[in-house]
Length: 276
Image 1 (cartoon, rainbow, N blue to C red):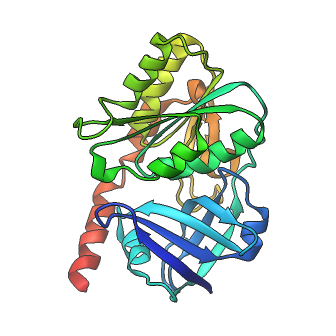
Image 2: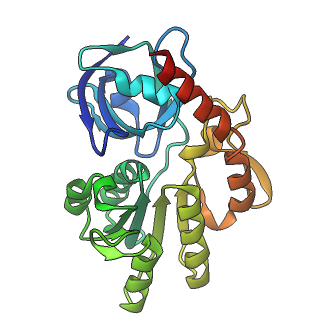
Image 3: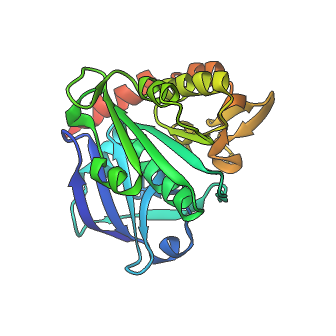
């Protein structure tokens, strides 16, 4: 059992931060790796990327959006309650090197994953520029944390309620027009966002790393749910990733597969709500 020692609602009740006691994981986990949890004895296995770790106090923090039954159950837990099972760290350990100026681009809950990854990149000696986006100001998370981590932070909102009116790719275009030299882009967020970023950076010849954590299911490679074509070869995000060369990922295939169970997920969530 892993006790929840802190809980925060980061947006309008659907973006939740949980800090959990997990000393063994906190000691070993590296930026970008993930854990698999079960809320209770009958719960499904759910992979979630770790946003923060505190190896001194033996805790990890996960940030997630309520999208289905399991995340709704997880969000309902209170401080002092516990998660039944928690295993990790899982996924490949991304070894960051000094490349120069790195632009980190995040959207939605992917900003939390990006923040942890950028910590690893900064420790390697890179200069960081952050771009974070949301549909509206109320849905933006970790602005202060990203601002403290990066030399410069650009914010975009789809509706123009905060920061630049537009998409994260518009902010990247601004950097290019300012002739900012970019050595690497790291993008984490919705698949449509990562695809758009990769299409743009490919034109400019900027190496781009993407994190495919949104497509994982059981976290072991057994279910095949995170199967993805990278460079013409079949890979599995949970055991071969979750980080890949974005210019090699077949996003069109990936996005088609990722919508296969949306109806089932929504039905499961509605059923659980009605049962309360």
